Image (cartoon, rainbow, N blue to C red; front, side):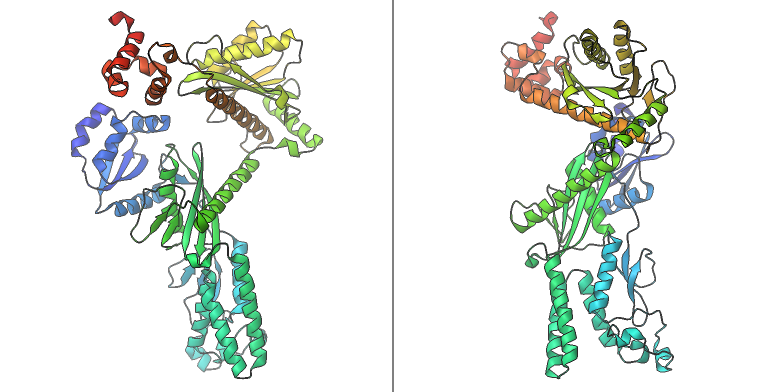
Length: 603
């Protein structure tokens, strides 16, 4: 849908709160969003200059827009969340690791049993959870079994069956783990008290349970039931040890949910700590896809209510690192600067960083940790998969980098015997290319690299990876031809998004199995050249190495240049801006100087 087409329908869009849905020409749902004012929010997609390529792609595909008006912003959020869960639109933030977590069920029956389940059905039973670890759930159930006498049998303990004397107590009764409701030795009220203690334990609220056992021990001692009092004392000691092990923060803090986030490209990792009565009783880190490159606040505004809903949390306080576009009635949003709450947030951030590092280790192939034999096996596999004439003991990879469409640099990393050879890494300040031209830049740096190796009679790599599509690969091959090195090494192009490999002159790409050792090594090399290139570019910018055409304009200072580049993103856009727009940004006098520099013929 074009901006002109949208302008025709804009007056028909309501100003009320609600949700909007974008559809493509085939009727596929692309995106669902919520808004305080539907007209203002939807208009922003078509009126503002879009800096995100993915958002631009979304807008280009919109063919039809639908609206649903609701009474409040909170209703809009609930409806948006339900639609995203149901339809999983392509351009919405998406929870990737959505799976079935275990619950602890209080079964809807006479003398309810307490046990683990993954199936949540509408049978009137009470479900606590979900829990993120089966091991943790089993530990909790075992802890309850040792401290609260509840039945574990599957007998149908209806009042009629108990009255008829159909059942006899089992070994659990004689061991003191059950009070014998099957023979009528325990009444429903006493059993219900045990269930209350179990609920408190599961929710991390140990104080009422400790108080109950202290009172019970005192009553038993006063009645001279010393063996029972000793058994209760051991349970009390067990509880206090468990509480000391579990309590992380000041128990007077109450109930809270703590969230932290780590954003990396179109992935976001969100850690959740469930704190109840000063005890962290649950922790979970989830991965979210962010197709439109949403910022941390936007992702958390989606993730926090989603995860609270998944874990049935009703905590009155949410502790987060940044402001949220989500503030339901009765919930306090806290951005701590110091104290116990800040320590909790720091702990959450430590967890999310650890999760990301572990994920990266699983995704990457760290050959540094393998034996020499294992390393060679991976290289032999790569040789077979790419049909290379020689074993790729020496691999080099090139990548271009620029900042806001300006200041191009390139980087090259080297892997020998499957391991990064950092002493052979090289970075390049582009010398012969004016402006941003990825193809010409790639040709220049490849030519410079292998002209030097040839001149110094250094060994050439068996495999060269060009991080880019067919255009960059073709440009690199031009340099290889000019150096008369065709056939002396193999060049492949690696498409940035699909992880497809292209060979020079081939029309079809090669897709390696996603979990193959070969592709993992290629990913490892690709990620390393990205890291090395971005680090070099950041260092160059911080040193003020880069100079733009604006820096050479007499009468225009650094602050003005920075403001222009921050606003217009590139020198080219500054040069094409109307003088009036420049004047509103930097003043009429400087605007005239800048405008005349780019339009000397207008004088």
